[in-house]
Amino acid sequence: MWKKVTVSLILALAIILQINVVPAQAAGLQGYIDTGDGYKFLYPNGWVAVKTTKGADIIFHDLIESSENVSVVISQVDQDKKLSDLGTASDVGYKLGKNAIAPPGSGREAELVSAESKESKGKTYYFLEYEVKSPTGLRHNIASVVVSRGKLFTFNASTTDRRWGRMKQVFSEVVSSFSVA
Image: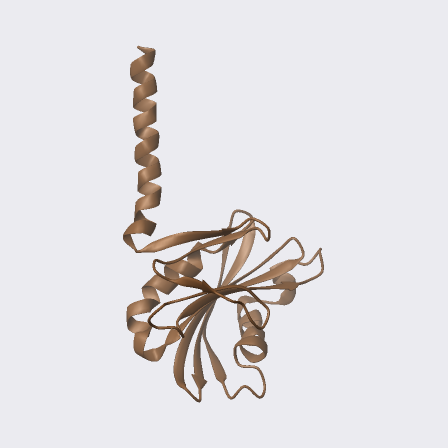
């Protein structure tokens, strides 16, 4: 009797684990975990990590479309700050667009297309979408912003206008997968 129950529980657990893993694999995504800084996310299969510059903690990019990338930037904030203390999703999105995505003198202009707030595991995340005009052409960025342990985490996915139609859904899944401890 106990053998049947144990086998049934193991089978049920295996099915549950497979259901939770298959969607990411089916979508062609793999996981990245940074245990030191306490964050994780999914990124497209076949992408590679590149040497970081300009303050990014990690950058992955497509081997073929090398300007298509995801990155994590970590900034310090007061230990007692919450994301809402920095403003609404629109406020933070506007500031991020003006100061990080299209800073003065960069030749880029960022238009905030959408800004929304979601709760997950006791943390508030802002999801932001931008259209970015630059000398090299139009780009699209989706970002997730969260505050945890005195740090502001910004996860950004970016691609060209030409690839946006194919990558929008994938990038939405990738950015939604970003989470912090």
